Length: 239
Image (cartoon, rainbow, N blue to C red; front, side, top):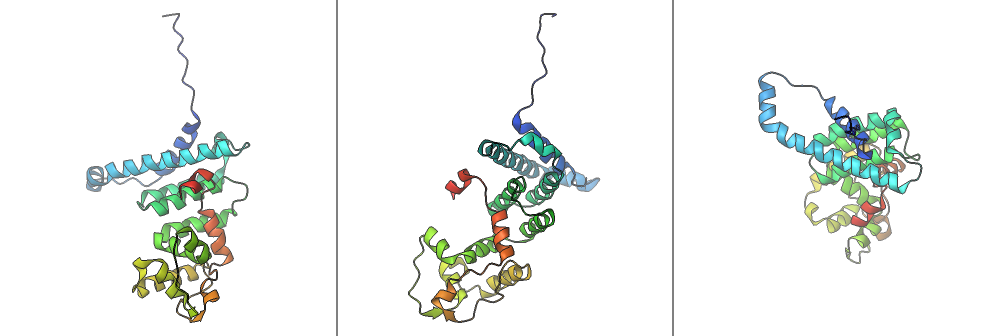
């Protein structure tokens, strides 16, 4: 027995991330009584799966950031109060969502929060609230109207040779799922406008074809899109 070498296992690079995210998720209020039994039987299994997948999603991204940036160290994040706050907010929102676009936006926000060129703290928290409350269609339409021409080229969309038209015509020609759903996308545009992310409140004004393809995002909208885009080349190549 005296010759046994019993050393304490060393922590891996991902352990810090797992600890931070698990702690943030554990901050969700506990449910007791009969509700707890219902929760354990119906909600807890998929919730546990979401939690584990979210933790791995964040851990993988942070490890890639550490490989990409020489001065980036995962261990340093445990001393970054703003990062802890961002992870807490994003994790609680992630557990309430299953849609891949929103989960990707939340993960990218967490990764971007670690970088030196991230927005100031209040803006980051405001942007996280936007992600939580907006739908994937909000995010998709906002990104489209940031640069409609580039979106069309990237997605191999061929447009008609319009002489004039309205942004709504362009939108419905790009997304066939929105054809005839004016009430739906009008509400999305109003939501984005009211949050200061778009500089147009309605899409039905007739204009030249150049006007149809103009960017409709505000400066804040552009900052928001940058905040929810992946800072990793690996992710960019997948899109």
